[in-house]
Image 1: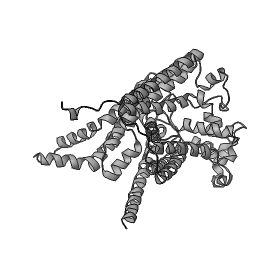
Image 2: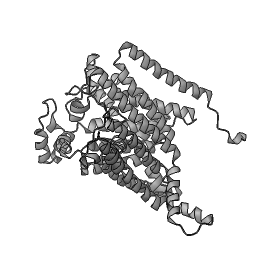
Image 3: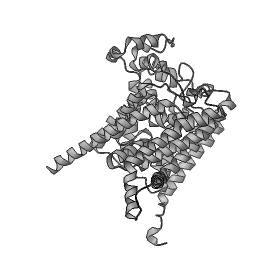
Image 4: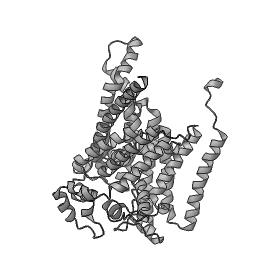
Length: 478
């Protein structure tokens, strides 16, 4: 092998930083466990978050990049890789569900998921990164991505507690339905638009999985593997990949076949082209496989510790450790038990706002569902912090870590796009990870609804930016 073909050596300084990060996380895990065994629950989130960060950075796993590449320049690699990753995660999820240890819960399905996905899709194209993509890019040193993460988080914390004039836009049927839910007096439903939207509309929508549509349970073998995996993931995923092949990949593949002297394309050539498109996304597919395995093991580990400690949520563990501030009215905190982003970052902002005097425990999002515990002892927070560090370690080892400061223009788009993603996340009860990637892979129809809206929003966002770029270039040349 020639010297030019040899891989570049790792910078010794980068290697030391990477090892230092890993050593620091080990010390945190060991030290906190020595202080109290309940911290083992938080360390599970920490190390799986670290793995998620490494996988995201390795696979360049960004939904915004996938749609931008597809709609702007006709390159399907990332979009194909994401679909493969969903299928692989779905396979692992089916095994976990069939054993009865899944921590996943389906979301209500209705048109609200499509609308929310559309808003989110526009936002991620404006900002140049989805929620998970912005997080791993932050770990690479991209400060523009950090602005996106902050904008998503601040917007969510504000949006879920907005009332005033927006209450006039709420249908009376939502208000009455919300009041009829019998929520605790501390949750001032009629003071918040999002509260009435959630309790008065979203909670009234059907919750289902593809398994239950066929009359099976999610824990049965038929429900997990046939209903949720085959019908809910593999078949629609294969159909979507066929559409991507027909419109974006087929022409280039067949052009190469003709140039190589092949006759008129036959069905075998079409299958070969379809397969070539799939295997052309190896790096993203490998990352997706690792994500799927990690998320499945995360479910096993979390559920196992819940059984060990005799709890169904981390809230009682925090309370036993004397940290009951910020628990929801139900004594719970956000504790998904699998890969999730955006909610825990919003909790950081909600906690700070509450400390500064803005009551964040009187709404459904924080006060009834997720709480705003101290970030230092919030399990999901440990996952997000470790995700940043996991991405940083992978970037350091691949010579891809570099601090990048935003320009005024990119910072503006980051804040605007992040705000739209924050709104879309709360209307859809999740982001590109929680509302799409995880839900689709676990056989939840609402995930496909959010995804359909996200595709439409991304298409509009890409077209807008094409127009914007051409307009700016024309002005500069003029």
